[in-house]
Amino acid sequence: MFSIFKFAIRNLRRYRRRTLLTSVLITLGVVAVLLFVSISGSFKAMMIGQITDSMLGHLQVHRKGYLASIDSLPLDRNMKGKQVAEVKKILEGNDAVEAYSMRIKLGAMFSNFSETTSIRLNAVNPKQEMQTVPRLIDRIIDGKKEGLLEKGEILVPELIAKGMKIKIGDTVVLVATNKDGSVNGQPFVVRGILEGISGPGGRDGLIHLDDAMTLLRIEDKEISEISIRLKGMGLMNEAFDQLEDRLGSIKDKNGKPLFEVHTWEKLSPFFNIAEMIDLMTFFIKIMLVAIVLVSIMNVMIMAVYERINEIGTMAAIGTVPGKILSLFVMEGFLLGVFGTLIGIVISLIIIAGMNTARISFNFGRQEGLLLAPTIALNDVVTVSGIVITIAVLASLQPAWKAARMDPITALRHV
Image (cartoon, rainbow, N blue to C red):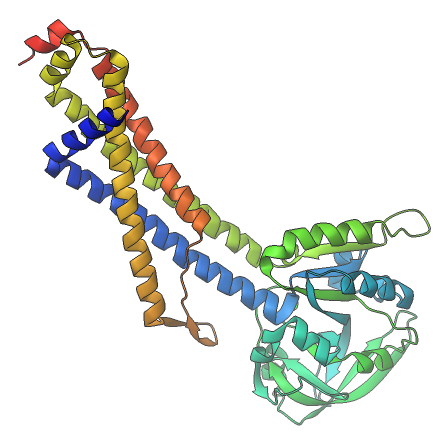
């Protein structure tokens, strides 16, 4: 095997120009794929962070059937006090859970005494909410940020604030109907304006949890949803399985599951964009495969054609077809390895340079977002494996042709 390796190296060095050009093509393909994977992965991670850390959390727990009718914000599907206590106990016993926030979601009429419109509201405990979605503070585009909000204050979504010319410090009135059908109103002071972002909750205002209970005349502590922040995004699938198993074992009087757990992926339309990014990455890898396949096959076909006499001589002196085949496959393998290694080194240097340069860009109102491309080891291994495997496969047909040559015919070739 070592002798075949030495012969393959010698042959590649003998045809330096062709070896160099092929290696450059493979290198460019590897660099293009790794840079695209790292940059798109950075953008994807940043956007997921914006969605989960400013609004949704990583996971959410609802009473069974609540999410299916969430558009109407049904108060009769809230979790009751004892049910909330059961969920809290399970969450506090899960090591993957970093924080959680209890919310009441409701619809109300919003009035500034001259105009009235409908509004969706999230009622939260400020301390819990800031621990669960720490970037929520960044969505406050006007007003005081410290402490999020106090009782009697409201954060108004930007769309309503602009349409009704709401300013910080204005007094507004919320009128809501509780689940029994009775109507109640309550004045609030505008503390801040919330930036609108896409997806469920992007146009919701915020009030204090205690104010919602007063407005809706809730005596027992009821909760619409519990948003959960994990200690790491990588723990999401494992934590989801654990919570679904534990909460799924809690049944109602009819023996049906009482709770349901959802990941952010099921709650946000951005997940479709994330899937498109993954799909584009897949097609970029397909392009890499095509580049490597064409490059290696072309080189190996030309190598067989130019070395027909040499192949005939090898066969004439007793070299078995298997060794001839192995020689050409080894050359294709080495071309793939050389091109891949050089491509990985160049990619890592470029990625390190981009991180050192701290390239920033704006996305909507988000300014100064840093592009921080990274490449995971499994991505490097996957791309390397694809390139080397395709290099070997592309060399098989020419190698098989060389191994099957008749020695006499090959020696007569001019």
